[in-house]
Length: 108
Image (cartoon, rainbow, N blue to C red; front, side, top):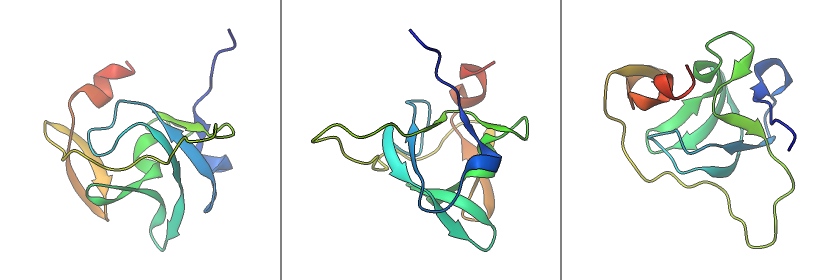
């Protein structure tokens, strides 16, 4: 099976569809759209906006975010369902808020 590569921050643009893995505390896994705000690209989450730059801890690859493949019939976009808790820091809506502790350790 071919290894799947994370979305590169430099390749992302508003309107792109991306696939989120199951490691986000602020939203479900699935396909969602990227939007552009004056302070950067984001996807919608329970806190309003989850900025893509917060996922590129190496400055290049967006951990937990993949370029979307074509959606199968009946597959829907990710919808936010849970609130953030824990000790890691993730940027939402221009502020830094607590994020799920497993997000950082999930990819180490």
